[in-house]
Length: 211
Image (cartoon, rainbow, N blue to C red; front, side, top):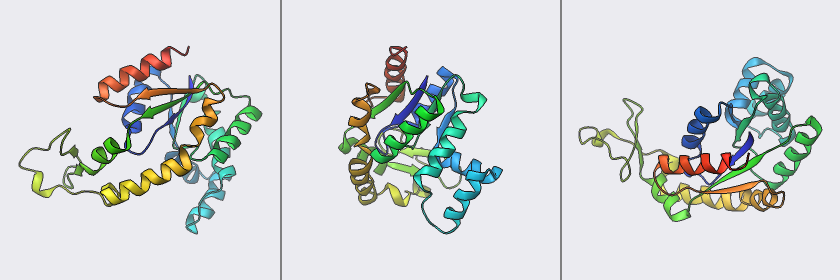
């Protein structure tokens, strides 16, 4: 199964990706990890990307797409992959589609985890991290033990203002890829409400229903 995972910030993409990898035995390819690995290994595209990153500039789409094609052409992705974090815009989706065609790689599905904005804000703003252990809690859904509450911290990008800004960017930049993939009969929507186990079951049922 060759798929792209899409959803707003806080939809649970990371949590679900880890669970789906256990089930389908395919690599999870996040844009950030892919860039860091290419830079570290010193591939031609990695060297090019490092030049932009060292200047504090965005890595151009064509470089990221080249890295993505290189990565999903590796042996461990021969039976499938899960691409996460790219594409983020419709032009990126169009360019990736062309690159996949050129590489002879067929995309099977784009899985969209759907969660209302109001719940996204509740999920993100309720997160707290224990600086001593690295444990992550949620003040409503996964409350911390009473003896660690006072030392918990909230990440700067987990405030309501930062969350709202991320959602605005998601709807303006990333959401347009949804009708793009829908028009190609690749989009599958999955309800992101409920426990992680419930969402995982829906995702597995949806993916297995495609094959």
